[in-house]
Structures are given as C-alpha cells and as structure tokens.
Image (tube, rainbow, N blue to C red; front, side):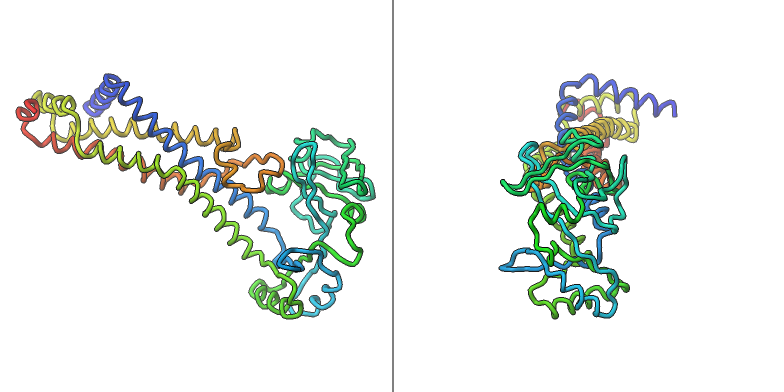
Length: 385
C-alpha cells in the first residue's frame, strides 16, 4: 500500500509538470461532458415532469374534430358514451389558452373541477364564485401576484374580466402549475364566449384498463368526427418527442463528440518521446511493468475523473440553475411562449453510468495501452528512442 501511494504521488507530480497540456485536455474533456450531460439532464427532467403530469390524467380524452383541427365538443355526446359498457365517470372540461401581452406568456385557463386531484394549495382556496380565481405558483411569480390581489384578463374589446386571487397552488408536476389559472365554470364560459351546450373536451374513465382501446373504438364508431386520445398514447408520444429532440441536439454537437473520439484515438495511437523516455528511465531504475501501468492508469484516471465530475457539475448548474438557456429552445419548441419553466433536478443514475463508460473508460484505456507497449520494451532502446 505504501508503494502504491508513492506511485499515486508520483502520478500527480507528473501531471503538474505537464500542467498546461493536462489542463487543456481536462478543459476540452469537461466541456464535452457538460454538453452531453446537459442534454441528458434536461431531457430526463422534461420527460419526468411530463409523465408526472400524465400519471393521474384520464384514460381517454375525447376531442371533436373539424377540418382536421380541434373544436368545441357537444355535451350531448355524454349520454351516448355513458351507455357503453365499462365506461366510468365522464366529465366535460372547459379550458382555453390566453396570451398575456404584459408578460409575453401564454396561460392555460381552466374551469374549477372537483377532479383536480393533484392540486395542492400553498395558500388560500380554490375559486367558488364569479370574480375569483386561483393561480399556479409559476403564474404568481411571473405576474408578481399575491393572495387577494386583482388578476386582470382581456380578450379583444369585449371579453374583459377582473378577478380576485383566492388561492395559489402547486402540483406534483411544475409544468401544470407553471401556466395554469383556475376560474369558475361560468366565468370561463363567458370569457371565451363558449356556447352553453358545448365543452372544450370530455374526459372518460374506464373501469377496466384492458378495455380502454375497445371503449375508444366504440366511441369513434359512434362519433366518426371525434378523436379519442388515450393516456398510453400520450405517454408514448411525449417519450418519443423528447427522445427525438434530444437526438437532434446530440446531432448538433456531433462535431464535438467526433473531436473527442479523434482525440482519444490519437492518444491511444502512441505517446510522446518525453513520455517514452520517462518510462525507460523508470524501468532502468527498477520499476516493474505493473508499476508503470499503475502510474499511467492513475494519470489518466485523475484527468478523466476530474473532467467528468467538473462536466457534471457544469451541466447541473446550466440546466437547473440557468434553465438550460442554450438547449431549451430546441427541446421545448413552441412552448417557450409559456411562462419561464424551471425544470426540477431529476437525474437518471443509469444515464450517468453509461456516459461514464463511454467517456472515462476509453480515455483511461487510451492512457494505459501505449504505455504498456513502451513498458514491455527494453529500457535502453526506449531511452534511445
């Protein structure tokens, strides 16, 4: 153990002797790890938030279609759908989007619903009468609004409403609280000038999860102009979307990844004359081949591990403190119109291990293999070059 500690000490002194070269290598390595980690962290955070949002969503959301676009759905559909075997609770939903010119953000306005199970009030209460609203903590932050203050909405020259904030809430998913404003049903219908016999969409619960597809097929047969959206389809779609967008971002940085692979290949193809001479001297003074390999292993491991953890820290700060300013427009797409979204720090340990084995392990191996070739050679010939 004493001899091994001295090898480690000598490895660190060797790195310090070539500090400019090693610092340059570590900087490039750290930046690459930071880029890759940022993509993985942000993608996983968005996917986790989305899945949390969908976990308690209804099995089927029914929309009415006209010309291939979503339009208001007649409430009378509920009577026919409720007669389908296996159908549980059916709830019409009233909601819409509102662009706030004051903050250049888009809010989701939704009628208060007894099925809002995920909502957790931070303070106050949900709206109970006209002229009241509850807002998510993201909306409260961007509007700098507090309990019992006024919340003004305007839509054109006709639909104007001044609401009193009765509650501020949060949920398991920050995506939902980030842009949601809850009003009473009557307030929302008047604001959007919706017909009394129509809703935005209809949520349908199915008693037996294995019958969801069958129920959706029967609904589509009864109403060909409708579109049943299954929760499983939404989860699969969002998962594919984020994976696809992450792939686009990775492609954007393909040059950096390729440069790193070339760098590792160049390092594995040989060592400098000074390093070969140093190995020859160490062998001449009595070092074993295993000692030389241990020395080079620790040199490579010190650079790789320090770069890896530095890159992870930089990525963590970039994504969860600066909201991934570089990557957000690509991964979020049009949703950047919504209020500023701060992703929660969800990290997939499996992804970190994969990144470790794809970057650190090849670098350390590239440090040891060429040194092994020099270490098994005759010291005299190595020193002579």
